[in-house]
Amino acid sequence: MSMVRTGVAVAAMMWAGLSQAQDVIKIGVIAPLTGPQAASGQQIVAGAKLYQALNGTKVGGKTIELVIKDDTGVADITRRLAQELIVNEKVAAITGFGLTPLALAVGPVITQAKVPAVIMVAGTSMIVGTSPYFVRISFTLPQNTAPVAQWAVENNVKTAVTLVSDYGPGLDAAGAFKKRLEAGGGKVTEELKAPLADPDFAPFLQRAKDLKPDALFLFVPAPTAGALMKQVVDRGLPQSGIKVVGTGDVTDDDQLNGMGDGVLGMITSYNYSASHDSAENRKFVAEFKKANANRRPNVIGVGGYDGIHAIYAAIAKNNGNTEGPKLIEAFKGLSWTSPRGPVSIDPETRDIVQNVYVRKVERKDGELYNMEFKTYENQKDPK
Ligand code: DHB
Image 1 (cartoon, rainbow, N blue to C red):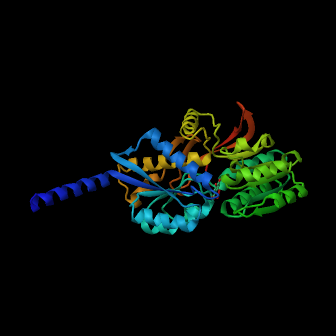
Image 2 (cartoon, helix red, strand yellow):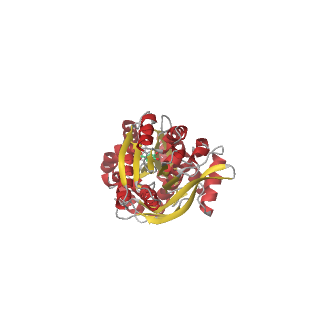
Image 3 (cartoon, rainbow, N blue to C red):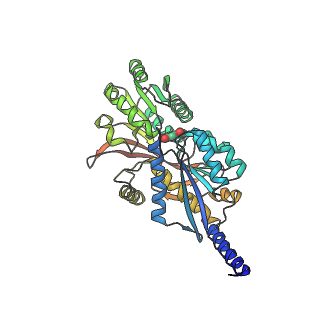
């Protein structure tokens, strides 16, 4: 082959590679697939993959490719992976973030690179305000806590003890519960905080039991719920005359069946229940179980699913243009029907607006479910 023809062939190959690259939009998914938060990472990835399985990979004539990375739940790794995905893989957006510190770690990276980051889990109120490139489709703890605090006010709770994981979302949850209960005339008599890593809940639960409040309010990140609730049930707290309440993180759908009948009747408030009564949710739960060896989706699974939906919708709205400053604009004001109910992205704050439901643990068809019985519509983060 002559030099000229070789040159033409190489140029043609390069052109094919380039146009193929231009037809692919990469999205980085950073999730804790190993370590103590592995259940969270597994739900994120299962939800994200299910969205693609049901809706295809084509948006605006381009192919969406997920590049999935395990940060093991360590913030330094999350930050490094975000940098690598942006610089080497040229991703249009990153998503995931199974814990508040993991989301916070990427704030400076996305601000500098002007690449949107869609939060699928982390729930501390202030996160989204730390970078103009954050969007949240999960929830905030004050948003999810206020309705159960209101339930306590309406159900004669005069005194309460709070027990939360000692980091951002726990402090937000305890603060929101106290604010709402005390506005309704009640009093939080003690605020207990357990370490996030390897917590032993026994001494805190004993202290709460000894204080004999009308209610005990609980928050831990969803993957820790099984360990907490085993201790709660073993110590007989629900039978001790103390109303045990919490955000729905503590009656996590992924682990609820393993908690046993001791949690029957427990009241929580949350943005998602696997038993949510809608056509969208029935389909979502059935398909999720089919694709994941009958595992039940939880709030994080629906976060993974909706996070990819939001990214598809923003890219479609921009006709395939993924320049960061334009892409972040496209998320603002999006609205859709999620398996959790109607949701939208507040154009001012880039935070999720959604229904929050008050629920009670009941047995249905031989399984435990959080049965929704009251809806607070279109809730923003109360701030
Ligand atoms: C956070 C993590 C969770 O798994 C959860 O259920 C709620 C909040 C967080 O770290 O923000």
